[in-house]
Length: 209
Ligand code: DGI
Ligand code: FE
Ligand code: FE
Image (tube, rainbow, N blue to C red; front, side, top):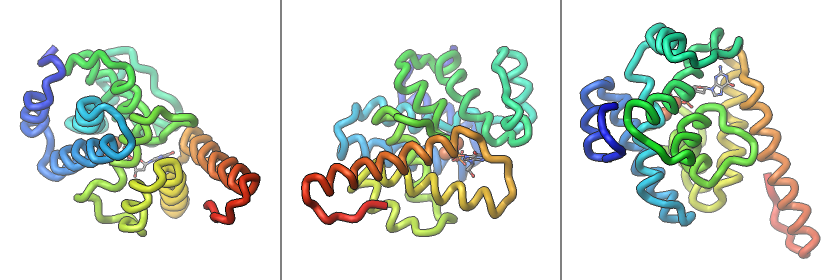
């Protein structure tokens, strides 16, 4: 155990271990998660902690991540084996708990689910999922300024748009798609439809996704 949930100490430790651009991203996610927490009424400290630690397993190469999973008996699915860039979420959640001393399960789950998302996420899970995508240093994805605006207007719709765009990107790359990413997209797409149904019952003409 390195330390106990102190964000300043955690930040110093990550800065030492991560390459500079990953560290910049990490800090960007932490602050963006805090901004979203302000907007949606989540605990700021939990948002900062989850944001700081969400990619903590990326201190290690894919091979080292795999070796650590074996060492700590963390099971790897077939899809994760084919696509090791998915593993850091699981290993990161484990390290957050066992190395960085995080005990809050909401924070652990936000780290665990930050890459594929999952249906019916908690507010903190959605905040970290969205912050990871929109943080200020991220610049290689399409329509970012629109998604950034949407994130502060309708978090669920932002989750849905991000998943749609991630799935489209993965299809162009011919990468193996984790079933959870698809299930999450379908869940949030249907959430949107549910909203449209409710709105039309109420007589509103607002168009959803
Ligand atoms: O760790 P980051 O680079 O900040 O971002 P991330 O944790 O979202 O994960 C990196 C990649 O994972 C990103 O390019 C999108 C991708 N990803 C999300 N869902 C899936 C996926 N990759 C595969 N192969 N399959 C998925 O279902
Ligand atoms: Fe990540
Ligand atoms: Fe990230």
